[in-house]
View 1 (cartoon, rainbow, N blue to C red):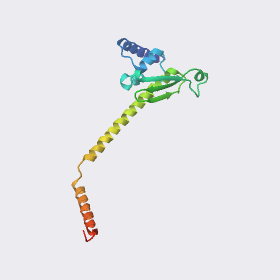
View 2 (cartoon, rainbow, N blue to C red):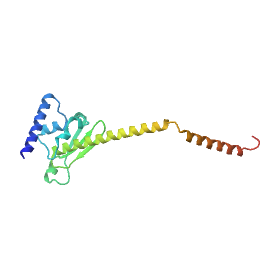
View 3 (tube, one colour):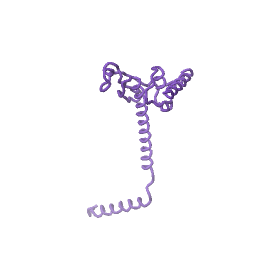
View 4 (cartoon, rainbow, N blue to C red):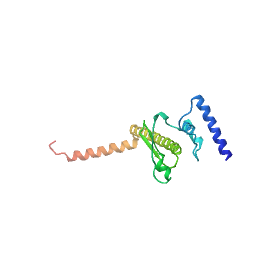
Length: 166
């Protein structure tokens, strides 16, 4: 238990340092403001490099959740819907009974979705370049010879079909 408290204390110290310097973003700010650090959250994942979006690009909505969780999910708006405005990607999380934990999970899932979308875009660009390269590449000499032979044969066949008057 003491190790866990020490880790939390160190995290909050780092966050306070960043707050003084004006470098706090995303999940760190969320956890700092709410004073809640969800169980199972690893802080190594939450550095600024891993977050492919700005907090100003997000629309956040809270609704009442459904499913297991008892009276809490029926009375408290624990379901979090997070929308990334520039791309239109929407993530909805209602996994836990805690709104703060759901907010963190929503941000993690949104970051993952944005990373996947970026990877797909890179793959499509590579495929387009490869297709263009193949299209512009010169044909090998053997294939050219074969094509010319086929054209000559086809031309000879058509000449034999001509009527005698031509």
